[in-house]
Length: 230
Image (cartoon, rainbow, N blue to C red):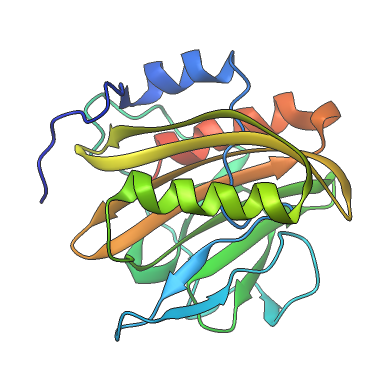
């Protein structure tokens, strides 16, 4: 495990911290709502970008795949603070590289063909995308890597407005919080994400929706963060 000290003056991300960040309407999303997140192959070369959330891509719709599956166990978390109780309308799922998180009960899971990322969508919130997964981390400092992502997003989508992009810690390891708004082919989007690295894997949680439904989406993101491992 890497050094747990904060870098760049960030605060640790636990339930209390995220509750405060919700008030700031964080918008982070590498590969959410028309944005791109690069996955790295084992040889260090860059794989194809993650497709825009909710858009056409090379994924398959499923409720149980090698990349994501529902579990029957209670969620656990090794966050510095105690995880909150799992709401009754959420369930635990297992994603890429053994990560777990919580999503709304009955959500449709759409997993990338390479198994690195899964989108969860529900009929009651068709504009909301909850993404989770993990892939081999790219070379370089985590914040520097995501600043490069942000530059790509700003160049490839309209009306990009960065709310926050900073380094922090999550589960005691280096992490990045990224929040922004932009306009894609689907219209205005509001996104938030957290990325953290452990044992050579970069895990991520991403939430994106229209600005008008962001309050509900932010609440779902908080549940994901409060109930994720590793």
